[in-house]
Amino acid sequence: MKSYKYEIFTSVIEEQIRKRILSKGQRLPSVRVIKTQYNLSTSSVQSGFDHLMIKGLVESRPSSGYFVSYTPEDNSFQTRVEMPLVVRDPEFAKNIMLTSARNKPSEVSSFNSAAPGDLVIPQKLILRTMQEVIREKGAALLRYYPSNGLQDLRKQISKQMGSHGCLMNPDELIITDGALQALTIALGAVTQPGDIVAVESPCVFSILEAVANLGLKIIEIPVHYETGFDTEYLKKVCVSNEVKAVILTPNFQNPTGIAMSDDAKKELLAVASIYQIPIIENEVYGDLYFGEKRPSCIRSFDHSGLVMTYSSFSKTLAPGIRLGWLNTGRFYSRSEKARFAMGRSVSPIYQELMLKLLQGNSYERHLRSFRKQLNRQAVELLDALRHYFPDDACFQSPQGGYSIWGKLPERTDMKAFFDYCDKNRILFTPGNTFSLTDKYSHHFRIVFADRITPESLTLLEKAGLKAKSYP
Image 1 (cartoon, rainbow, N blue to C red):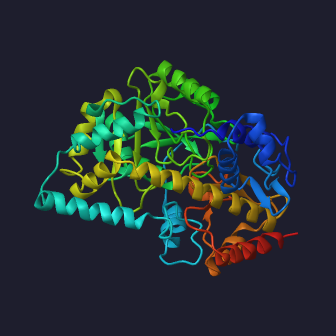
Image 2: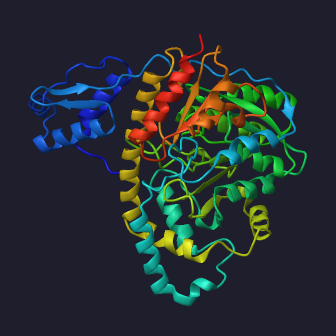
Image 3: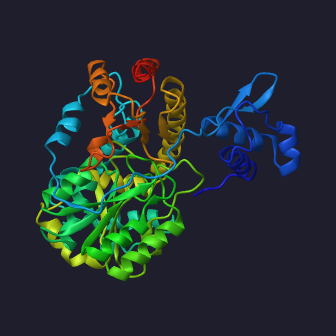
């Protein structure tokens, strides 16, 4: 990841804001002072302040200077939800109704769709590159490609991940029709129907659905709202249960937006190694970080091949690009068989498109711009939620990805609240879709994957007024 000279002072300001040493409205040192203090050029200091403004942390006041515009609030989650040590057979009728029935196109407010919206998709880049691929490859795009994917594409993905410290052997990679197929392949390689798998809680519905479709049993591991996946809880589970796999999103977990620390990832890997439990890590949001560098994958610390990592490009480019990948670790042979049973090969045009984008620097340029935009949207949405909703509502500040996890006070009539939101086409995702329990009945997920408009903020204000109406 490229570093910038201004980071030597912006990182200090960000840390002071995070620790509340600097508070909202407080004036920051002038450009001249910072220039002298850090031995920087005027342009570097100005670029640094621009960077802080893009992140929503600082504002410029004409003739007055720069001021802190955001301070982390105290109304964030302080702990985790307590989960019973129970193995469950998934049942999904209610969750299907709560998800698919709400996914309608062309909504004014799309707070429930965790995919790039039309206004943020790099349409020109994708379509121009696709046209180049068609001209260059012609009729070859109509033939079968290798079942495990283009070798050059696998090499490029390995190179990209290696640049972030996650070393992968291209020969252990399989190209897939998106992330969900990669997860299904990974599960098929290490489990049999009736086996127990551990999943994080709350957990995105599509993962629960994939587990259910394979006839597996689920035990939910709570996500701690400060440190992420609760490894201590997993230890307790392993004492009395034979867990065959652990599935989690270590970086910018959906729906909470939490990223595990490196120490937490190492601790989880150590526990999995003791019990020889494969870890299947979802890295679809890893490139959407709001900090200065990409967080590590669990795979980065694994030297035994116990970790299987998967991702896709649908979250970073466009939801219609159904192309993902799976790093199989020591389970390549079984994964290859599972992949072949699902179809001969992945779309040739998508493979060639991603190969061309990764070979140049256009994809990385897009990511840099996209991350800044998502960060702005996250800050704007958090400010609106904290302004419009009850003072004792809680909202988890995301560290990356797409999601804000919210919780309304216990006095709230959630059925009436969601009925009101549905009637007014304000599409939040109810918390109960993220678990097989009823532990999240007062929670909801709100997504900032599309541009926030005055119209969507107006609808958010209406939802907040409804939430405040309960005495």
